[in-house]
Image 1: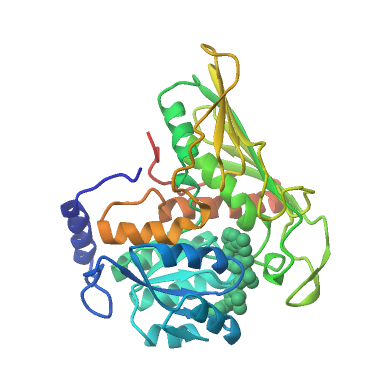
Image 2: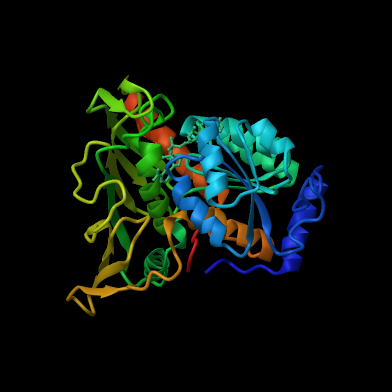
Length: 390
Ligand SMILES: NC(=O)c1ccc[n+]([C@@H]2O[C@H](COP(=O)([O-])OP(=O)(O)OC[C@H]3O[C@@H](n4cnc5c(N)ncnc54)[C@H](O)[C@@H]3O)[C@@H](O)[C@H]2O)c1
């Protein structure tokens, strides 16, 4: 459940932001915001993932889909037609100058996120960004600072902390039910997307596309990482993709990360685009543990991918036989992030997802690559509010 803050606290926070030399947050360029309890949304990037986001946003009572944009005009037009969205554009400048909206939902190529997010923040739009928030930690941090200066909010995928299974595991850990936590492991991989080259180009890679989920879940459950060691490699040096044909793979397609969360807690993530996986990109039918946490009194195994979990297998010293818990998935789906933060903008309830957490994950991704290049353990300076659920 979101951490409840009162409307008054929300407004006080907003006015503090204003005091820092900014304009009124939550007042859109179009005037008074959210009078009809709906956030006006402009979505950019009408590719694969928009096919999951748009139906969810379309159904949200807190969202009015105002415009879509894609540099491929037919994609923008097709999305507008399919979801009855009144405006479509082929450039972000046209979209920002066109029909007014409050929240930009950025679903473009990973390499475009930082640049487009900045343009939107400069025009005082709230931003929900697919992962990563930016190409580097420094760029992401500058975006968060900019959002505060502009009096708007910034959030980034993934939405893994919203699942009931994340909440269940977090409570078990915080309540000491598995004793002193010592170690954790998570993995996610498949054979890689086939439609777009950006996943394999500089600024892409399996860390920001796949590892990002496990890093967000493990840091969310065990606390911010203090330091990281990593190894990365390229297993498949050439690929053929729909939009560019044969390409040379530049970004890592295989990665291992070791994280030190402090207090003796160590965890490990592995991810890659070279994992034979009968469940494919959509993860259909994945019913095995993908994330495990061990403590001195018990262990927790998350069933299904952490972006689509549906149970937690638990064994404790009081109940040694493994039992299946947290089997209710509630309303959680991985594509809910932009809808959830729209609801939070309307209600004033702070969501569980936080830009600081997304930035922390981005710093870990960068540190993994630095560790690979240098052979050294890399300190992490960023942090976020922890625990997320207690
Ligand atoms: N495909 C998935 O299932 C999935 C799931 C979760 C997250 N994601 C993330 O979503 C993002 C997009 O992935 P995708 O698979 O949809 O890629 P995609 O290639 O299918 O779609 C990206 C779209 O963005 C458009 N675009 C690129 N630059 C643009 C710009 N400057 N202005 C306007 N439009 C622009 C492209 O033309 C394309 O239509 C990535 O960050 C990816 O990691 C994808």
